[in-house]
Amino acid sequence: MGSDPGPGTATSTRWPGRRTGPLTDGLFVQASTKDLPDVAELSGREGSGLVLTGPDALDGALAALEHYKIARPVLVDRRRYATDKRVRGTEPFCQRWLRKQRQLGTAAVLTDSGYIGQGDLAALTAVLGQTARYIDREGTPAGGVWAVLPLHRRWLREDRSLLIAQIKAYGVPVALVLEHEADPLGTRVAVEGLVEVLDGPVPTALLSTDVSALGALAYGAVWTAVGMRSSLRHLYPVTPFKRHGSPSALLDPVLTITSIAKILRVYADASDELIWRCPCPVCEGRELAWLGTIPPGMVAAEAGRHTLAALLERREELAWLSPGERRRIWWHFRCSDALWLYDALGLVDRYQWQKPGFLKSWLALHP
Ligand SMILES: [Zn+2]
Image (cartoon, rainbow, N blue to C red; front, side, top):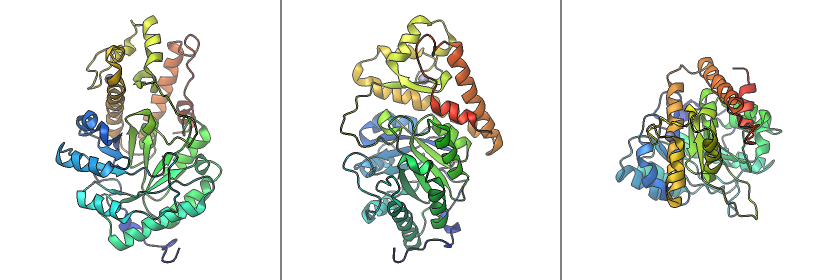
């Protein structure tokens, strides 16, 4: 590790504007560069911003800033940690990739980390150590330098103490990416792990997430990013099988992102219920079933826009509350209301939906 600063390094210079900067309380849209025309307007809204993702994210950031003139935070996540071609966390950062973010004027610098696998302490310390050295050498831009930590699920569970000890020792802001085949925060132990990291001494963000972005913000995440498409809503483990996800959308009253086909089945039986009318700025009061009437090539993008717009409305409610207990209580009751509606609508009994593990796990915490 050579010049690794490690434990004991002064950290305050690495945390500019911890709770006051433009990133604070953000619920950003995480999207690939090809989705930019669909998300540009949405990511310019209050409380929003954009995390362009993938190997061409720098080109996307240039277009977002210069062509679309997005006035909210624009960030880039290279996502070298994903797919079967992913690199390990021990891989050196690309200095050009980091420098280019400063030249473009992105709201903060995100490291182009490799993947941190099960028990791979060398990868974890390589990412944190490189970030600390980079900050010491290059200084900190206004929004900070964030070590992107793409974590195997075990890090929030059995190896949680080790993870937290290392984060604390290196003292750099971290942006977590959680790996799981279905829902990384679908169990109580995982949610407790996340909350313990959020309680720690360094600013923490959550990339590539879903509805749990609201829970993370309620429990102290500085900012979050929600995937525009399901492929960016968490980190999928590498598998030899190709995934074929059907387009999904947020059914806001039950805080659940699920396939549009499932939503339409319930709608067909219970179209007189009040839950269908969506006040988000994309639906503008239309019933959510409108997603079933648009051409297949447009469904995923429109559903993603509705999902993000509705989550941004929820974020607005949360942002009115002061950080701490009031936000946690707000989130507790949002989860409780959503689960109550599952029963009231007969989603489990009549339609064989399952109550999402993340709602039950967040609810189980004592706010
Ligand atoms: Zn909507």
